[in-house]
Length: 256
Image (cartoon, rainbow, N blue to C red):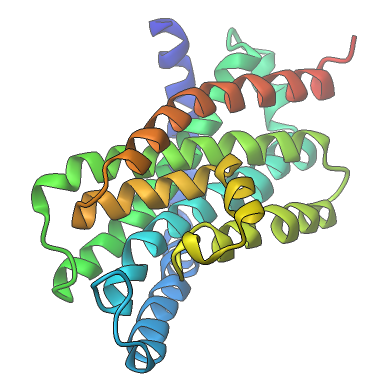
């Protein structure tokens, strides 16, 4: 396992070197729009809402926006970025000619996707601290772990999509049917309890639902049960998604 991690880290470093060439555009895209939504909705729509669960609307949406930022950054990296490396540039095939195995490549990609998600969410957290919205500094290490976990989970799912995609347009299915519902219905902008019971239960299968619940607990405390359930879910979901995308990418690159 240690050897696999070291090999995966080489791919992670390769992606980091490429990222350094365009990091300003990436950072602007990953965190600029979510911050505008955070303060646009929080300060605009928030003036029309007295409170949500005993807090201001801006305070309510802040933990969820952090999770969405991590989700989007990881998803787009492991969709467009990984697909380009796999299908257009043939980077994976070149790497497979070295001692690295396919499992090393997948682990490196998931690690990089999680890193992109973590970097973006930490940037948002710094904005929340400066704005005086976040005060639970002792929770920061656990929040970082949570953001890395949701980044890894979404990276695995996005790699599954990349493995079966035939073109970039294929990603519209994933964005419309998976990412957008997770932004709208996982408790980011309104309490999930407002959903019909069927939808409330259905969205429990989405990892962002649990990342938002964990973040909100770490931000403000309250009922610990949703956070405990979410932690258990992510502990099992992350390795399952890595296994699934490894299988699909192997089927694409190394046909039987």
